Amino acid sequence: MSFGLHVPRKISLSGNGWRGLLAIFMIMALVSACEGKKKKEYVERPVEKLYNEALDKMQARQYGPATETFDEVERQHPYSVWATKAQLMAAYAYYLGNRYDDAILALDRFIQLHPSNRDVAYAMYLKGLSFYEQISDVARDQKITELALNTFKELVGRFPKSKYARDAKVKIDLAYDHLAGKEMEIGRYYHTQRQYLAAINRFRNVVENYQTTTHVPEALHRLTEAYLSIGITDEARKTAAVLGHNFPTSEWYIDSYEIVEDKKIRITKEDVPWWKLWGDDKKPAITNVNANKSQVAKKGGKAASTSKEDAPWWKIWK
Picture 1 (cartoon, rainbow, N blue to C red):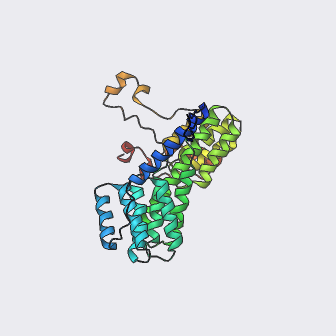
Picture 2: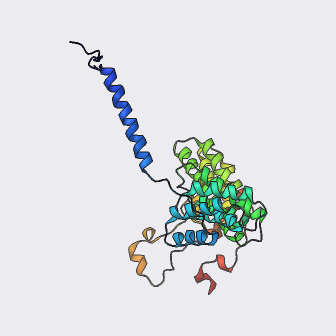
């Protein structure tokens, strides 16, 4: 008997239908979870409280949270004088936290936004340090060294009387020394591979462009070696003479003199028979290189005068 009611058929879901229904439930659960989370409320706080809180975090070596709080100072109080200070302090916090790339970006932004600010010299100095701290050994690429060098040179050029200029000059010398060391390493490699012309170019670059570095004496000696290796004896003698004139007490000059003159002038205990070491009438085995300098200089440079300091000590008392 029918009462006029419509009886629906059973719902059947195919495989695709079940997957679609499951996706809907997952979306609803995700939305529900998101709604359940409380949104972070924006609370405006006094600028001095924010700034001091950031300083406290820095003192506690919480550099990450400190940068966030300094950024909040600028966000909440963009027209305050403390916002400008907060920009610089955030960069300093990045630097202390070894986040050098972030520090450099923040410092570039500060310098660009405040070119006449009295702290620009410090910002440039901190930027240079951020590059300088990343300098690796001479075996690696020296692009960072060049960036540090250029930043410090710009600082000294723009602010020569600032209190940061003195240390920047020291860092410039160290950076030059590092770049010269890289050239020396490449030159030595070419020399060991018997690519003497390529080695000469590297050593000459050190002598001509890095004259104040500690690598110049060795570079002159290596040049002397390379010239002799390709048979250019005159250039070898001239280079050895330049080395002796400018670095008369250098061990590298002794090495150059020995290979140019093909004679050994270093006298050590190993060169003296053991029984002579005990004689009272024997003088110390000391050889004065400067006394022989004129022999090299006559063939390739200006001879230096022989002074009292050039003579062995026992001859002074005669």
